[in-house]
Amino acid sequence: MAAGSGRGCGRAHGRHTGADRAGVIHVVDLPGTLGPDRLVGIGYLGIIAAAVLIGGVLLARSNWLAWAAAAAVAVSAMGGYILTRALPGGFLGDHGDVGNWRCPLGIAALSVESVIILLVLLVVLGAWQARIHAASVGAARRPAAPRASEYSQSR
Image 1 (cartoon, rainbow, N blue to C red):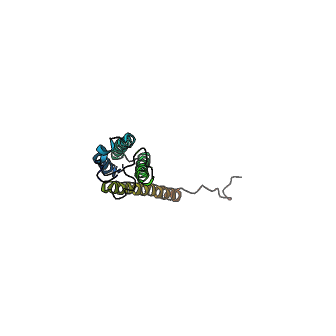
Image 2: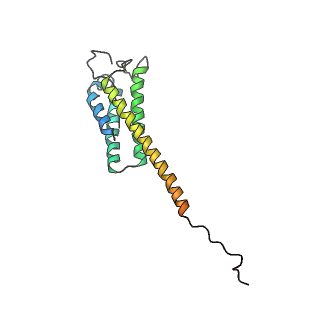
Image 3: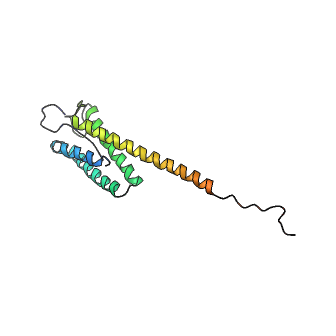
């Protein structure tokens, strides 16, 4: 975003176990996105709604699908941040943020989204290790197949 443009400080992005924080960052920056760049504002509303919904699901019950959705929202929000700043002609009609990599709200959002992605990776790794452990414990407890003694056969 160009200095002095009168809008918020750029595009932050988000989800929960951080979702609430990412949602708050987007709410704070939302008014500046509802101007002429309506597609960016709609993207913000989508991120906020997804962050609230996924955060609620994760609070109610941790589920692999909710964690996957959280990662997807975080990655897409990060992608939007990068695209609005990296593409020379702007992204979705937003030309104000091109080259604005030092926005405090954007950096805060990227930090929260990075933590969300790390949490998802930890959850996946933990589930993977739990499956390996359960399989090895199950194999150790499985009784050997009964063997008929060659001398115990009836004649």
